[in-house]
Image 1 (spheres, rainbow over the protein chains, first blue to last red):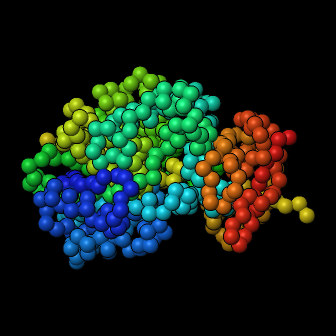
Image 2 (cartoon, rainbow over the protein chains, first blue to last red; image 1 turned 45 degrees about the vertical axis):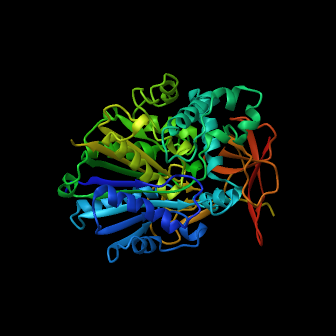
Image 3 (cartoon, rainbow over the protein chains, first blue to last red; image 1 turned 30 degrees about the horizontal axis):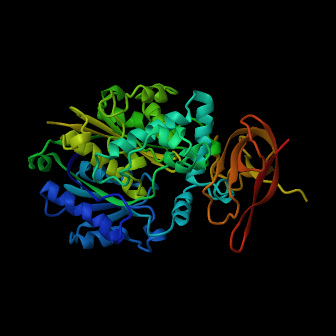
Length: 391
Length: 115
């Protein structure tokens, strides 16, 4: 297997976008082509979860490859729930590493705001077990709510810790022009003041409104290629050094210890092993904070902090910009937004930007190794990536 | 007739699984017709719960209380709670009732009450 490099990146604004899903996918692809200096690619992978259901658009990759006038390049749509993005990057990696292709464009795109919030939530809830969960009215926020309550009871995490994640990520997103939410928030406004109950109502007790990511439209792209192609552009060389994936039971109640996210633990371990690094070597991480609790727990399961200690490190400011390990400098899913199929690619976009030193006011100083965790279902399919700067 | 929720007991190793899987999680037995259907116990202890305020479209109530219960027979189940102030660790008793009314169909599932 040969080494694989990220040679071009692109992204749309994450927000409510009033143009078709195909163009939400094509636009970041165009940006990434320009960024890489390439005129064409050998293959295209498009990560998307709801095109067929929400946007009445199946066969998305075929539509995108034509929209970008890249035919007759091969193209496939990858659906792996909210982990579709990182899964598509993994497919792209394998295509280049195996020698089958020289250049692969990986796009992630989703348009969830075409339907109302009820339909969007129900669309995501189709991830849950149809007979053992979905029929009870279980949605992703309710799974996260049950998980959070148990985590609080067991490890002493409080609503204040959760609010700290939200405040940090909203602050980071202020420096990200592509982020969905440009809205600075304070602990006082969402927790302590008399208005907090109105500002920040309960969604899935103990999770409140500001503990949940917004429903976003958006797209992102990373072009992967061989070493020869990576050396051409006048940019730092960024290697896709590690990939790890793991799965867990479909129904959450089936897990022996409901507060463990074993798929994150295993995916991160494999990813670090492949990259030949340790969690302590990581300079910047993008974690899948669809709910604030997840940033804390993933930071533990990935091995950055001990189990049950993630909220202590958060309290000390270690995960802020300028801290020991900045987490979610982009604003994370919480504030950059979460167009489900695009998220894994958007995380990779942020890490490549950071490692190139192009992140402006949210730049993590001297970032050389970056990590992403893309979390599918409620932890039943997790894909982690490690990128390193070569020069 | 008393309604039940059923689990699947492997004919080879005796492992009980809920929900259904085509292969036994314990012994990976892959013969045909390899499960006995056994009713799940209805008594158990509340593991965790949430009050959900953003409800799916099929519900007309203000909130839905959902939880995971560790049953006496060693299995765990997700269900609805008809309990005003649930507490982790409390004893609960389940009943099979309508848990979701869809357009043409009523779905049955486990609803737990305080003992």
